Amino acid sequence: MPLKADAAAVVEGAWQSMMLPSDAAANPVSSAEYLARVRQSGAVSQQPEPVGRASEVGITAGVVARVYEPALPGIHPLVVYLHGGGWVAGGLETNDGTCRRLCNLTNSVVVNVGYRLAPEHRFPAALDDASAALAWATQHAAEYSADARQLVLVGSSAGGNLAAAAALRARDDSGPRIHSLILIYPVVDAALETESTTALATGYLLERRLLEWYWQQYCDESERLDPLASPMAASSLAGLPPTLVITAEYDPLRDEGEAFAARVQREGGDARSVRFDGQVHGFAALLGVISDADEAHDVIAAEITLRTQTSPDTDVSTHEKERTS
Image (tube, rainbow, N blue to C red; front, side, top):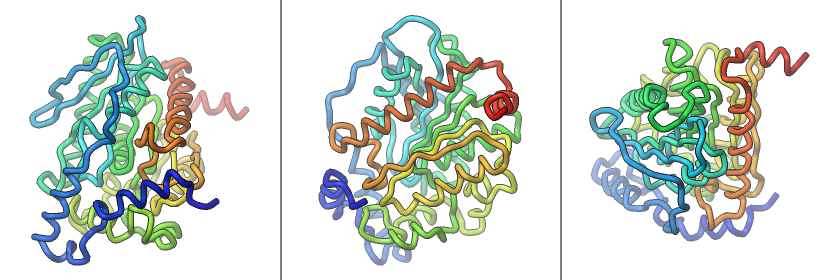
């Protein structure tokens, strides 16, 4: 379908701030100037949605998280959220609205992670922070009346990359058991060779050359085939938690996100993707600006509620056999 009017307005309004200078990839000064400009553009200004309580905690050296607790009493699901920003920008404010909305919609304790940014902290620093946050959240869950057995990992864009990689690391290194994985228009394939990456290379905010620049800031070219940098490079995606991938029609990352979900399912996992037609990368964070953002939050909240209502002690493979029998 055509680009929706609210998405088109966002593209037009943010075009100049998102435009990568033509010499940024080769010119360190131009690259640094663009990085400074991107970091100055923060979250959409809006009245914070009230939650029961929001507090900031130290996860590890240099890493702070904001913990949102619901107003309703009881034992709550535990959600760890990793923001987007191309690994180079963003922080606790970037998806503050999303975390507050999910806290209220799902009656969950949400941990919003301010991981270290590139290029000052290159791969695997941000991933290490994501893994540390998972460990911290499970260790401290009881302090916030949360159930560590109902752990949901959510990541948006570059945060989706970190979430997928952290789930692979947890699988392989006997890390925290993740009950559900939710990836919102994730970066999962450094090859940048999908049809959507080519067809949508320009004109929709997140351009192919900007993606290339983000990868350049995040890790060396020789590291991009590491599955913890590029999860689609993993020899196997089997054994990942039940996975939901949210994509947007006019997003160059659309096809790699959908391919990730399809591959998880093909390799025996429980996965699906939901595409929002007429939308662009980043739409889900724009609550109050893009109407589909509310629907995206409803889809994500429904997934969290569905997965956390499943017995935390149920083995994923057993549950899948029962579902398909």
